[in-house]
Image (cartoon, rainbow, N blue to C red):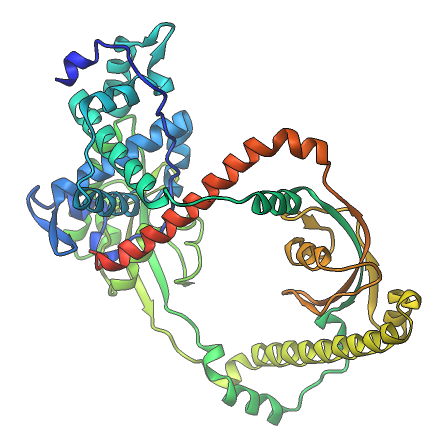
Length: 478
């Protein structure tokens, strides 16, 4: 029927760009090569107790991949290493299950309406069928019937989104407050108490360090570490699927041999070694790989791991060394313990000094608010004083860091008032507003409607994201 309906050019604009949410992969999926080695009807997991087959999983992966290609265009292949397609496929399966449970239907006409408004398929007079078929064949490698079912499922998820978020609204007050938050500017003066300024003279005795180490042993526990041997397979001028199939064949050959190094050399590959790296660190000279991280956690020494795709290359790893989490002897990490002790002591001293400053400011403010001089108080206590240029919420304040906490504090202060202590990773601060640049009311009136729509969409996305997380929990996560 869709083949016939494609002849029609009726449509309303419903091309919705669905945001790609990057979330950690679930370990039960395994790697791509493991999936490819299993039969189409094999069950690889369950959603709400319903079995999920290899075929269904692969269909979901292809669907989210096609969405990504349509959204990112030629950038897809550069961005692919940052996209967790297995996790996106899992999310899609769960959402489609929920849409089906709610009896959400999508008609053929709705699919056609959607299709005829996807920009990449359009010509001068609407849907260009020749262009459509060419893109499906050469870029998506997908049959029209399959692609149209992917669109149908995407629309079902969009209808689910509408159901979940239909009661989300924004009030006039919310719009004004959020607009002010994003457009107002402040300049502040501040007193700063930075821990690194209190390290001088902190020289611990040996017994102090031993006592500190005994009380904080777990803080010095070294995480799981690995040393890997590996070969690199440059991607040939083949399709991605063909390249991965070729990598699987090489992997099977390497896995059979007793000596990974000898087998690799016979195949013409140079064997490299990563050296020890911790599980929470990138792979030396390669970078991060979610796929490898999941596999490594379960691996044992001498395991040859399935191919990993990263940065336009395919890697095959062998676990040469696995170092379990351990707490080193005190003598071997004495300097590390000393650094931690000094850091904690300087933090406490900086905090104590800023608290003393706050108490002095409160006393001075109570007697004469207008005479309060932050710079003078900072100098008397040996603390730093500074000031900033105008900044907005979400910006960066030079020498301090992100502006959010400072903006929030400044927006609550009245004339001559000072803030409570603001604690950042680098230092403690007390601030006072130096100047405030309010919003342009005329500009707000002009932009209000568009901004309100944007804010409403953001609130809906936030609601739907929360719904998705709850749904994943209920689904038992496969």
